[in-house]
Every structure is written in C-alpha cells, then in structure tokens.
Image 1 (cartoon, rainbow, N blue to C red):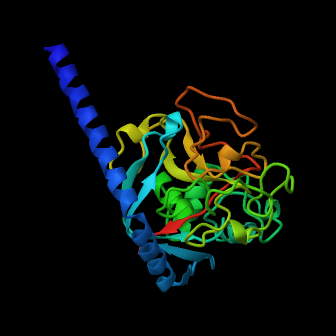
Image 2 (spheres, rainbow, N blue to C red; image 1 turned 135 degrees about the vertical axis):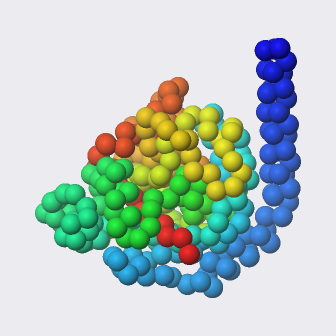
Length: 287
C-alpha cells in the first residue's frame, strides 16, 4: 500500500514537471509580442509617487513571466509564473526616507546612523524592512515579484540583458568599494526601468528560503514557504565578486557573497534578525 502511494505521488510529480516544461516552451514561443505589450502597459501608467515617503514607483502589469533557470540547483526548474499587477519602488529605500520613518516613530534606529540622503539604507534587519514598508503603505516584494521587476518577462540573465556586468552597469566588487547613491547606474536598469536590481545592496524580500521550493511552488502569485530559518536576499551587492551572483534568478544559498561556495543547507539568504552594510530593501504597493 505504501509503495503504491509512493508511485502515485511520483507519477503526479512527473506529470507536473512535464506540464511545466510544456508551459515554458509555449511561453517562449510568444515572448516577443508579450514583452512589448507588458513594457507598454508599464510605461502608460507612468511613475507613481508614494505619499508617505515620496518614493517613485514603477508599475508592473499583471501577467506571466519566466522564473528561475534550468542551470542551477536551487533555481530549478525554470517555470512560468502568473502575478497580479503591483507597483515597486524604482530605487532602493534611502537613508533620507528611513530617517523619516524613525522620526515618525514607526521604525527603530537612530537618525544619526543614516546620514547620506540618497544612499541606500543599510544595516536594516528583515523585520525593520518589513516595518518600514508597512508604514509606507505596502509590503516587501515576494521573490517572484522581485524577479519579474528585475528581469521583465524575457529569458535574460541580468536586468539589462545578457551582457556580463561591468562598472557602468552595476556597483559590484572592484567598482566603488562601498554603496553608491541609488540610481547611479541607469544603463543597468531593468526592462521596466527599475534601478539597482543588480549590485549596490542585497535586498530583503518577503519569502522564507527553501532550496527546492520551485519544485512545488504554485504557478500563480507564489509567496514562498510557510516557515523557515532564513529570509531570501536578492540582487547581490557592492561586495559581490562572482558575476553569477548578480543574475536576476540568483537566490542566495548556492553561493556566498565572498566567492563561489556551494551550500547544501536550506539556510540561504540570512536570518531575518541579521544586519549588514550590504543589506537594503525596497517596497511594493498593490493597485
């Protein structure tokens, strides 16, 4: 009986993988027109300025996109995901904006620790990032929402396309040696015009990390595992040494930020209570 149940579960898994593979093939066959339509919808909506903190936000239309890759263990399988529409911060949350939240009594910290207005707010825990986004009227993006805003709906490695990173496109190892003001790399913008999705600072997202989550994640509006030990961080930082870390599909957990080091645990990203001079965040709003 147990063996029969196991066979049924295995068969269901195989059928699901086949269906996902067929969905990816069908999606890729229609990418060109869908990409044009998606970018056009975003541009038509223009820039939204959030009243709470003045943050500029970019509209990401509802629809499907390709998430993950077929190349790396914790990014498999490449799969089609549908997301509802949302607005995402065009830039990482800045020191000036975070100070405003502290002054409003809604964020922890000392305003003197966030001196340079246009630089990304760092040394912020996941809990503090979440509190800020709630105060601003939104929330942290999910992994899927972050990746769509970074990649667009085409199959590409980086926000700007497939060209390897350089110091004109992103702030990573060998460029500035520290954070830079947000928006300093316009040539590295995503297809939707979202800035600094590669390099400068790692960005907290809403999801708990699970190595094999994509193998059983829902195809519509995934929100990540229910529980976990670590929260996902995305995008790489000014300290990231491997070009692979800056890829839009990279999920921290397969390599460390200080080099190519494979990790087999389910503790990718970092503890939600961790702070680091390489960790920042941005928020989303729902229409």
